[in-house]
Length: 104
Image (cartoon, rainbow, N blue to C red; front, side, top):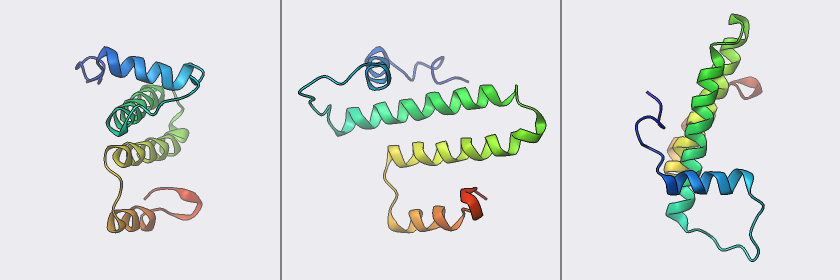
């Protein structure tokens, strides 16, 4: 089920995402705070993952594996946005990557 349909994005988070992606920076720029920045980054990752999963159905089967690797990388980015990797987790993620940056 879509994060949007489940009510995950409230209007404040949606406003932050729109500001983050489409609006020019406001000067002097004030940092929104760690928690708001984290919500925005996670929401951006969720939106990108959802769009990539929707787009996957329109790709030829030969391109599916590469697209799935990109989705996996965005899931890792979302995980890092929720809580930064500790040393052991980062080592595990990096060791699971293959030649050329593909994720195994």
